[in-house]
Amino acid sequence: MSSSSIETREFARAAALGLSDHPRWLPCRYLYDAEGSRLFERITETPEYYLTRTELSLLDESSDAIAQITGDGALVELGAGSARKTERIIAAYTSRYGTGRYVPVDVSGDALAETTNALAGRYPTLAVRGVHGTYESVFPLLPSLSPLVLLFLGSTIGNLNQGEAEVFWRNVRCALMPGDFMLLGVDLVKDAATIDRAYNDAAGRSAAFTKNIFARMNRELGSEIDLAGIDHEAAYRPEWQRVEIFARMTRRQEVHLAPLGRTITLEPGERVMTEISRKYELTELRDYLHLFELETLQTFTDPARSYALLLLGPRQS
Ligand code: AVJ
Image (cartoon, rainbow, N blue to C red; front, side):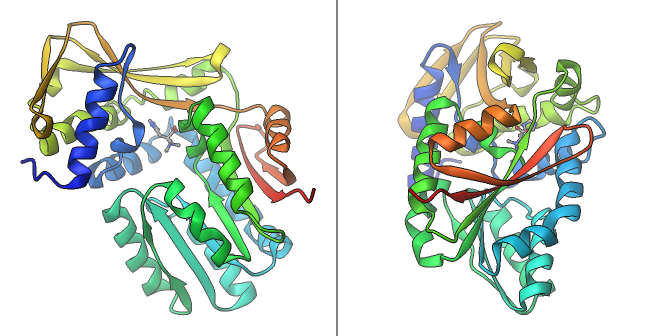
C-alpha cells in the first residue's frame, strides 16, 4: 500500500487540502496515473468524444504548413500522454528537416516511457528526451532548447482555472524567445448537447475515468473508498464556458489518507469536483493571448468550427 514516497505524501496532502475545502475538489493531474492515462485513451475512441478525432484530422491537414512556417526546431510537448497525435507533427518536421529533437513532458512516468520507446523505434534519426514532471517544471529548460515549437495539444489548457491559466501564460511568454513558436489545440464553444455527450459517453468510459482518481487513492493512500458508491456527473455550463466534472457520493464515505493518518468523511449526495474543461471562442481567445504578448499567426479549424489549432509566436515589444 502506502510507500511514503515524496510523491505519495504530496498526493495525500493534495487530497486532504481539496477534500476538506468547500466545494470539495481534487487536482485533475492526479487523474493521470498509468491506469488513468489508459482510461483517457479509451475515452478518445468513443463516438461521442469528438475532440481527439477532430484535432488529429486538423494535424493531418496542417502539419506540413506549420513546419514550413516555423522552420526547424525542437518539438517540446506539454502533457504528451501517448503522443499518438504528435506523430503527425514529428513526421512533418523529420521529413522536411531531416533529424529532429522531441522533448515530451508528462506527469505520468509510464506514459512517458512508452512514448519515448515507441518513437525512438519508429524515428531512428529523432533525438527523444522525456521530462518527467509538471508543465511548470519545464519552463526553466526552454531557453536552452530554442529554437523550439512548444506543443500544447488536446485542449489540455481547458483543465486550468482562470488563476492557473494566467500563471501558465505568463510563464509561456517569459520562456519563449524570438523565433520560437507555440502550437495550441483548443476545443471551441458549441451547442451544449454535443459537449455534454462527449463527457457522458454511453459506454461509461468517462465515468470510469472519473472514478479512477478514487481507485488511485485506494491503491496509493489506503483510502478504502467504495467505488460503487460514486457517480460520475458532467455538465456544460454555458455561462462559464466550461464542463464541470464531479464525483457524487451515493453513500457515506470515510476516506482514509494513510500517509497523513487522517480520515475525511463525505456525506451522501456530496460532490467532489475532479476536473473542469474550458471551451473557447476564437476571437476572445486571440484577444486574451494578445494580453500576454502572444500573437496568433495562424488558426486552423474544421468546417464545423468545432475545434482549433492556433500557431502562436511571441510579440516583439
Ligand atoms: C485531456 C483534459 C483534454 O478535458 O476533454 C475527457 C480530459 N476528461 N473526458 C478534456 C477529459 C473527461 C480532457 N483533456
